[in-house]
Structure formats: C-alpha cells, structure tokens
Image (cartoon, rainbow, N blue to C red; front, side, top):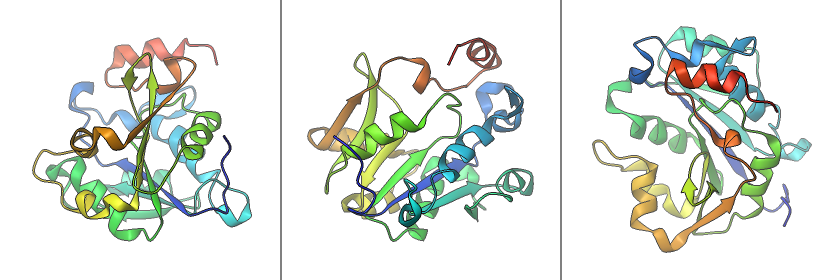
Length: 205
C-alpha cells in the first residue's frame, strides 16, 4: 500500500508538555541526543513533512507545550505552537488541545521521545488509515506510538476522563485497531530513563 496525500488530511499532534518523572526530574525532551535536544528529532521529522499540498505527509503540525523553553524548540519550524496551561491533567489535556485545533480527517499523535522514528514508518502507518479506524505500529505483537486516529473518534478524544490516554480508546475498540508491523524495535524505542537514552545513542541507523 502507499500513502496518497491527496486522499484526505492528516494532522500531526506532537505532545511535549509532560513531566518526565521517570527521567529524574529533568525534562527529558530537552536532553541532548546525537547533538540536538531529544524533542527536535520528532519536531524535524514532522515539520519536514508539513503541507500535504506541497508534497508533505501532514496537513498541519501542532506542537503542544507547557512552557516557553519548550516552545522555543519549535519557533523556527512550520508548526503551530499551542500552550498547555494544565499539564497536571496529564496526556488527555494535550490530546484535547490538539484535536480541538484540528479540522483534519485523521490525527497522528506523537509522544516526542522516539528519536529513531523515521519517514518510512510514518508512511506505512498513513497508508493503512481508514475512516472509523485506529492505526498503530507493532513489533512482535507489542503496540507502540505514534498512533493514528480517524476523526470518527473526535468526541472520545475530546472527552477523555481523568487519567485516561489514547490507549484507553484503543482498548474500548480493539476490533477497530489496525496493527502495522515494523521491521525492528529500535524504530519505536522511546526514551524514559537516562539508561535508555545512553543505549539508543549506540544504535546504528
């Protein structure tokens, strides 16, 4: 299958307003990874494919942040920066803000801590999109991010309860989830601890 950018609109929603509690209090998204802040890898991947009408993968790119330091990371890129004034509400608030701003047929949610994610993987996911379905990458049966939601789930995404995430919607609709197998685990690896960051630094691309 292939990705037809003219078929419908997909917006990228980059969620960067978490607290990085497992990273020891330091904001992990600002920690250097291969010469630049961790968050820049996801930002540049998404922003580099901005503007479907001009050949990109995404109609718009939304960058959800909680402070000016993080906002500055996207200031030089073609992204729409949205301030999350309630990061203590958890991931559901970033989801709500991104979906509220979007008018697209599909939303792709990025956690911004997967520095080895690549264009080929995004294209695989986008190629499987379908109205009323959710698409997620999988390696050896284990699902990961980024996740692609049809706008059919808009109301559920806007009304997540306390402590809920996008995965709660997946659990409620397992029969509507499409898993896309990727060729290796490193592509989907996320950085939650300093140890993981160090290990991924040594992974060959």
